[in-house]
Length: 179
Image 1 (tube, rainbow, N blue to C red):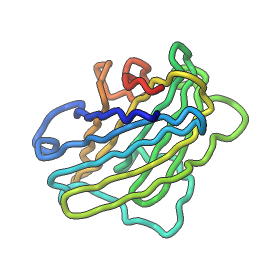
Image 2: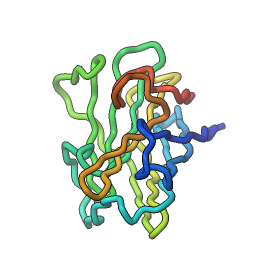
Image 3: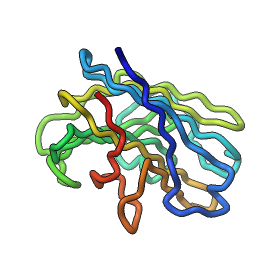
Image 4: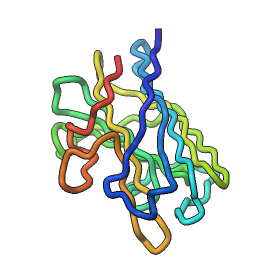
């Protein structure tokens, strides 16, 4: 049986740009297929958020965190290595593997997402995705978002913010347990 775990992201700093917004969703893990499935939804006053136009092609692109994007981090419980996935509303995506905190794994290439589907309206932006993981057993997951607001202001959203500055890579932010 697959259990869906609900979540809600909180902004790192509250301000007028974050007041009329909320980000929430569900996450699950299919152990047989080793797939993490996440549905995320941004709701609220989206008129002041810079949302890239969707492209016909979905390409790997580094640097998506510089713009509006949603992110997923996966780690095996009790281990220092982890995977990072970034998704832009443009359809671009990127994945990374780390041996330890912010130490990129050398060699090999991270896997591609199985599915990533965006929907957008005046009042919401949502992403439904499936990403493969190489991990077995219990997973610790971090879910986050970067929103680029008009005027180049960014807001940082996560399940929790364990440090004095936004840091989605810190394992203390991987608080959603999936098994």
